[in-house]
Length: 467
RNA sequence: GCGCCUCUAGCUCAACGGCAGAGCAACGGACUCUUAAUCCGCAGGUUGGGGGUUCGAAUCCCCCGGGGCGCACCA
Image (tube, rainbow, N blue to C red; front, side):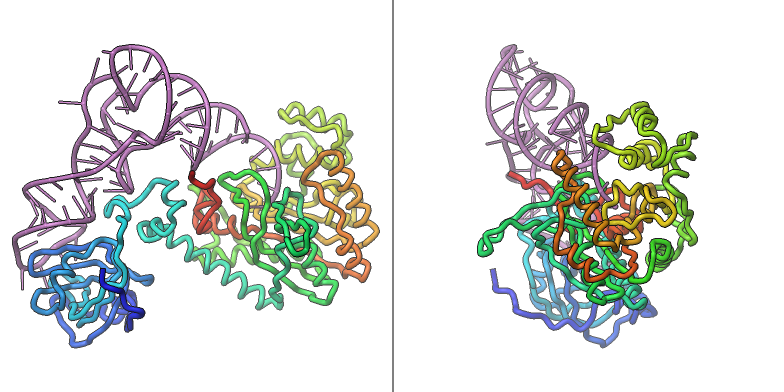
């Protein structure tokens, strides 16, 4: 095969030509010469004429070749679907109204040695689509749309937070101690240091150390890794936004969340009223705020909170088909009751407020009830979108909470946190009142792209390697 | 990890115990305004892998592998 050129001088993208020549009439020819480049989507050779549909990242335009006017016409007629081509010629509109480049010269930029699927029905096999994303992307417009939406979403989020005075930072991915969330980590090894390191399960502890250092408003958008099962809503690596704001409490962040999400909805979808998987969702602020206890009472008809006798909580859990462990206290039992009986029925948007202290080792005690913490989870479209709380700032209490976690870990809870002395020392330097928030970016993409499966929201989702 | 479903040509799908097929793509040819162009021709397979039942297996059974969904866990 002839060697392909090192570069191609493109003058215009398909979309720009479509806009510029929108009023060009059928059958009209211009003297404007342009160069376009892209991938051949369809070819229609017909003797001494040939048409090809060319697609670039902006859109599509037709190439129109004739034996008289096109150099290398025979080869042009023989183009295959999937070939990359650069073409130069005058802009015309054919009698059948198709805006075209009447090709004078053209060059093959890449030969497609593999065929990309059915030109009409595309590729629908989900495994092929995910394993060969490059094929999925060029065949399925929807896939391109999702990635474009994801890009815009992250960009909008960044711009908005910067506008609010937040500073973007990057913290380590390799952690000596996995912390900041209740999850199983991936373990890796550093040869020169001779030590195991963990892929981060959350940036939380480092971000709070930055607040200690005087970064009053910080955020990070980045990958976190959790060594857990895959599901339509869980990928082992996913992208999280975490932000921390000094002098604020969790109620301030609830307002921030409803503002951010509704603004994103307006920007990305043109409305704060959405259909998600066929079901309506009204995102206009303010969203409902309800405590976990209130929601349990509402869903089950029987009140329950952290002060409900442990025996009663156990009884109700058993009735709900759950098998609570011996070690669980009232807080963990209540959370389990909420997750079994109440959460599945929530659609939202709703802020589920005030979690048990027992299950929230990094959150600050509730100002009205020491058995609770000031924490909320926004539930949107039936799904936890994130997690936020007034941060625990007291080093002694944080140490006590870590100790309780360490005890749980020793008792077999693999997801319990380890004691992080660096973090404790940071708190001893003084963390001002601070509120922190985490939001799953992939889940936001699912919401706004109307995706049922998280893998569709990720360019290259985790799959088992083929053998 | 467990349960159910699924895997046939590059792609989309038939055949469902009796000769493995079609459309598109690819390849060869015809055609000067096409739009999934059309027409003629040609080729394309370890039916995910292995084992078993049967005169005969893509089809029924078992094991293994990939994927999907559900459960569990989380955001």
